[in-house]
Amino acid sequence: MKFKNIKMKKQYVTEHMVEEGLHICYDNISFSTFPYISYGLKSSKHTLEQYNSGNCIALSLFLKTYFRNMGIHSYLIPASVPTQHMVPGVNHICHVSLLIPYDKNRFYIVDPAFYFLSPLDCKIDDNKERAAETMDIHKDVHSRLKYVLTGPDEHNQHNMQCTCYFNENPQDKWHYYVQEVGLKDADDMIGAVFMKHKPEPFIVKTIIENDRVKKLYHIKKPTPDTCTIIKNGIEIYNGPIKDIPKPILKELKMKLYKYFNKTLFI
Image (cartoon, one colour):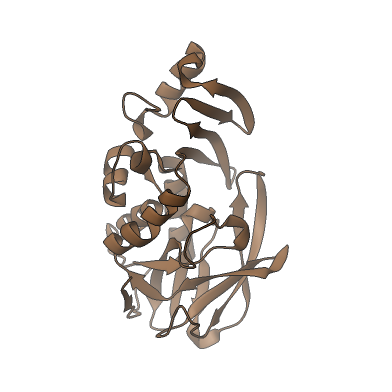
């Protein structure tokens, strides 16, 4: 993978504006691997355009486009993930997030795939450990993380990184690297590797409710002919796709039509 250094710049963007963008993303864009695995798309740009969904690359790209339409420049950046979230077999750099400069020495980092409620506010000229809120949508609880800027490591020879850990597990650190990654490289070297090691398609549909990210639907397809359907945290179906009760199938087609093709789970 090739990375580019990011030139920080002063531009008008506030924490509130970033949080508003995150809310729009959580309400409208779903984390889904169906477009890649079931429908054969290779580009996260195309998964967004055709199915309003995608992986961490697509979610970050949605926000990049959202801010670009406001005249705000931002950058896709590579990242690692906590051990608890790592898919076995993937590389250390296995994730993508978004960096938004707001001054020559200051920038925000947002990670919609980790359901950030507020951005990481990174200040090169005032570097100290800070805290931010995320949402564990599977447990329906807030999760607090700590972060600080650190120097280059073996995965990042030319710049700094933002090092993070969750309060409950300070030894399990991960990093957001302050370098730009191209969309094609991200899809080919990060997204495709993730799909190779996690080939069973799934989708998570969320909404914002009372300043919380709530998981509405979580659908998994463990085999080509079966699926598990979770609604509001409760499993409502687990079995052959051909036997999904008609009321459930009708509901899914009404609520999730923009995230699937006409065949839904094929």
